[in-house]
Length: 232
Image 1 (cartoon, rainbow, N blue to C red):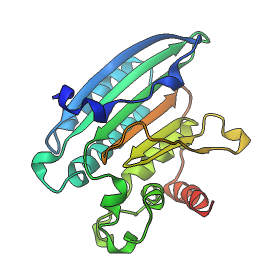
Image 2: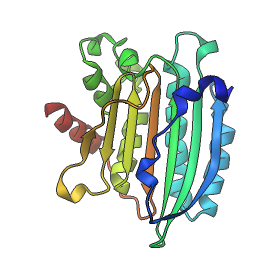
Image 3: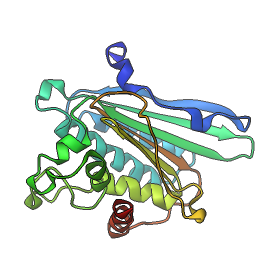
Image 4: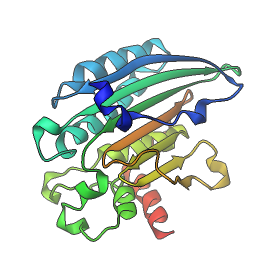
């Protein structure tokens, strides 16, 4: 199974290379999700592991909940046919010489891509790929009709990353973005990465969380941040 989809689940690990990195542990090996809802047992396992690694129950539950939202998105939007919907989950723990630690979690699918999915909503059909991918992080923006009250999974994912001063990378179709808050004091929190790692319609999301207190960022604040990016 993994060999079949290997070209679609490769992730760039360059950010973690260097003399300061001393240890890496694959706390959640690449796990294949084939059926909606089947990710729950995997996420329960991950939440338990995060607790062992020092994350509070609140933070562990929040991270698990966000991954659950993203997995649900994959299994709902990634492909027209149920039999072709599939996603992958992975989590790694990294330690550094300065006694700091980080968590890297990743989720990927091999479906139609964020832009193509979002444009199925007539309200967003005129968006470019870049606009669609960035807009998908705004609250209540979804391929579903407004009355479905969808569109919070990606918003919360970015909100948690902003509050942690971490890093989020999303690659979908031929677009690849890095939203970097690690050194946000310089005001440069957005970077467009080109070319993409691989040429595929699927979506890959990687999140880099640093071990320190998570600040609560509201969905409205996330939407304002994305609006600023769209104005650039």
